[in-house]
Length: 313
Image (tube, rainbow, N blue to C red; front, side):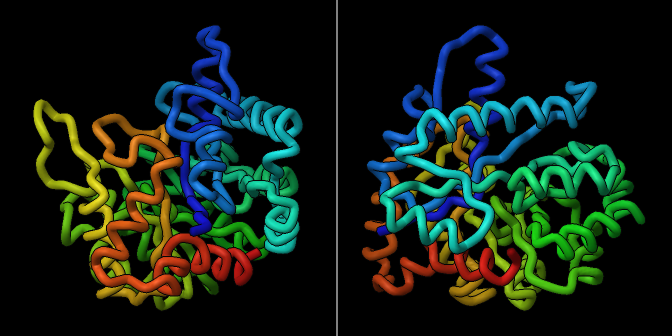
């Protein structure tokens, strides 16, 4: 089964560890995502988020540029196995060559520092999806809602062909996107609030709104967004069964065409039954046990993502 994952923090984690002097690479590492694991898991496509914590990082734009330089370095070193893509046609070409496709995304809209020209610059470098915020107010999001700058960014993203990502956006900001978006948008790594009450998750109405836009929701594997209670001592458990629960619930509310995968690998702590991306077969087996057919699993695992990318890019 081919897989397209809309969110991992592997590049940011590699960058962070290199800053501490640790030698590592995308080819092979002790994280949840590397090329050996992606190949074992049969991945068609992996989104790689460039993330900066603006509560700690004084210059988010410069930090993001350094992470992109690392990403491009890894793409060049491992060009036999993986290649950056900016179009769906390039994904198809990579597949023919037996290569994994890599998509750049931004997690934290303040990376652009409120400057639309910087947004265009990142688009030219291959960024094809961006969240408006992470866990802080910024120039795009104040008091929970989009600012005038945030709305201008949404319009520019749609004009360019960059997918607006509402993961991490407060409820008010989510509905601002609903009011102003003209096309599909995504929640790259978010779950169902009805099953887990965390504010990062989506209400039933939000799920429907994304589905109605023609967009997609990537199911997040982090136990904090799957379960209301920790396993023990604030340690959350991510079971394949609970991931499947969220998938089934999303389908019941928004239909099968709005559901994809957004693991959040290398961006969370806790215990994960799917220890890394090579174990994606566990989820396929769980869905088959619940009666999902091959065509339905294909939609969830990669076809819905490709459809949205084709519509937006």
